[in-house]
Image (tube, rainbow, N blue to C red):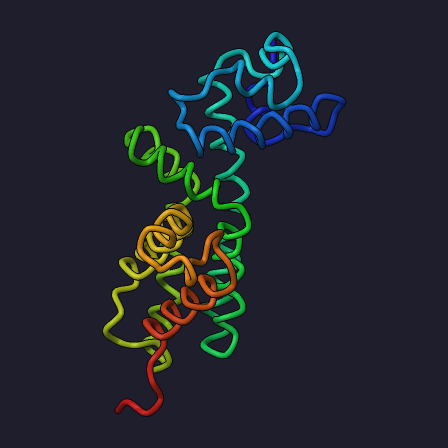
Length: 220
């Protein structure tokens, strides 16, 4: 019997850890590009370079592989995002851009992460609701509390709705990174299309998140 908990998180280092990690990486890319229903285990096995039977040794079904991919992705996100957002809220405007930039670059460096989350949120709303409540919701209250503290000190715009702000940033980053290449080519002249999310995307997202949160010192 395969250890399902190890599948989801990468497990304790062993001779099979690298194989599971590679399978998860390939499945993430194919699920993001084709959707869960449009991707077969045989497709994944061929890209990984193993037999389907070998893939099933690590993940006993396609559904368990889907769960393993999601849990692996959300675990990475859950380890980094709360720390970065809390640091941003604590350090204020001068450091905000560099810190929030790391959050954005997490998705920019591999847009498939955002595409998969977006696909799953649309296709399997109830399942994703449970997973997001497990992996993401616990830190939302912490971040919003620091935003409120910034409002009390006068550094953060008092008109900001803390909960809505955090959720809007998540929406903007995930949807923006997931659809950037498609919308760029559809809406911009060929000579101006940005293609894969690059520093221009990142810089503009940072600017929007910063200016919408912190108070203009010239404003009474």
